[in-house]
Length: 456
Length: 182
Image (cartoon, rainbow over all chains, first blue to last red; front, side, top):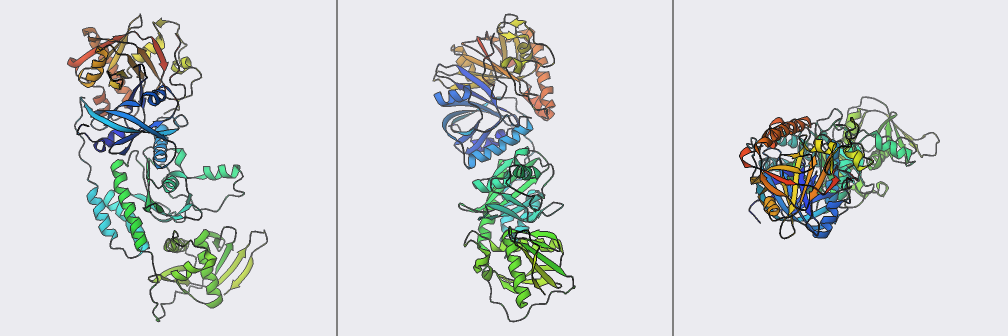
C-alpha cells in the first residue's frame, strides 16, 4: 500500500462532501453512485452503508471490489480507495454507530425515512491513491487534543471521591476541550437504564433524568458499549415526550410516568456519547453536545473515548469502603423546623416530599430506608457498607455503584431544598440531615390512601 | 431543506414537477434529463480496469447533442487510470446528480472515445461550473469550498464522448437502479 494512511484522511469520511462509489459486474460493466457515508473502522478497514438492495449491492456480492473517491471538505484534497468487500454486519457496535450517524446525515439532507441502514459493509483497504486536484490551502490547525487529554487525566488523578471526580470531569471538558454542555449518567444494570448524576452547562441540572438502554444516543452507546456520534441531529435519537406518548399509545404505560426531563439543549447540532467502561462492563456514559453541527470529529471521539475509559478506571478505584467512624459526634444539622411529609409509592419506589416528586428506584429505596431508620431510632449516621448488605435494597453485588446512587440522592435533595439532606462524613460514611419533623406515608398501589407509617 | 417525496415511477422521479413532461427526446434521454445533465450538477464516472476492478472518476460538466451523444468533460490529471481503461475500450458509467434534491440518473455504454475539449465547449463548461458552484453554496457548503470544487485547470480538460445504450434512475432511495424506458 502507498504511504498514505486512512487515519489521516478521516475528515474526508465525515459526510460533509458526498463520496463516489464505483463497482463493476462480472462482465466489466461499471456502476457509479454518490454515497453519503464511508465509515472509518481501523487503519486497514472502512465500512460503507448498505441501505438498499440495488445494482451496487449485487456487484459487490459478485465481484467483491469497489473504488471510492473521497474529498476533504476543508482542503478538497481527494483520494481514491481501492476496497475489497469482507462482510456485512447487521447488528453490533459498528452497525449502531453507523446507523446513528446515517440518521443524522439523512436528516441533514431531508432524507429521513429514506436512508435506513440495513447493514454495515466492511471492506479491507487495498490501496490509497492521491487524486491530483486543485486543493485549497489547509485551514489553520486546530489545537491538538493529546495535551488536553493529558491535562484532564492529571487533574482527575487528584480526586479522592466519586462526587468530586464526576463534577471535575465535566469541568475539565469545558476548560480543556471547550465543551460547554455535558453530563454523566450511570448504569442501573438491573433495570438496564441510565440515570444522570452530574451535568454542566444546562439551565436545569437534570440530575435523575433516566434513559433506557437502546434509547437515543446515550442508550445506544450503553447498549453496544461503543461511542455514538451524530453531526446533524435527527428526531430518531431525540429524548422527549414522543417516546412516552408512543409507549402510552401502545399500552405499555397506563399513566404518564413521573420523570425528570432531559436537561439537554433544545436544538442540538451535534451529540456524542461515550461508554465509561472497564473492559466489557459499562458503568456509565459520558455525554456531550453542542449547538453547532459537526462539532465532534473522529479525533474528538478518540480523545473523549480515552477520557471516558480513564473515568471508568477511576470510578472503580474510588469504590468506597468505609472508614472507622470516630466516636466524636458530627455537627448536628440545622433545625429549621420545616415539617416534611415523605411518601413512598411502592410500585416504583418513588418518593414524594411534600407532594412533589423527588426520586424513584434504588435511590428512592435508599432514602426510605434512611428515613425509616431515623424515625424509629433517631439514627442519622450510616455506612455505605450497611446499605450494600441490606437485602431490602437488592443491590447487585458488583455492577451496582452505590456511591453514584448517593450522589444522585444528595443532589436531588439539595435541588429540592425541602429540609432533608445527605452529608458525607468520612470515606464510606454519611449523615442524614433532617431539619424538622418528618411524617412517612406508604402507598402500596392498591388505590387506597396512604398509610402513615411513622411520625416523628 | 424540503423532504424528497418518494417517486412512484422512474419517469416521475426524474420529472420536473413544475413543467409537464416533454415527449421530445435526444436519443435515449428525455429533454428533462438532458436539461438536468447540463444544468450544473455533480458528474461522476466509472470504468473497469483490466483486472476487472472498478475505477471511479469525477467530471466537471457535460453536453448532450440532439442525437443523444454525451460529451463529459473532465481533467486528465484527476482521472488518469479511468482514461487508461476507456482507452483500452472498456465500458463507461456516468451519473448526474443535482445537489439541491439529489435527483440523479445514470447512463452506461460499452465504450467511449477520448477527445480534446473543443473551444466552443469552454464557455458552456464555465457556465455549468458556475451554476454548480451556486447550487453547492445553496446547500450551505462554504463559498470557498464550493468555489474550490468547481474550479479546474482549463488546459487539462478532455472530453469523453459516448452514446448511452441504457439509462437508470439514480436518485437515492428504493427506486434507484430502475431502468428508464426509452
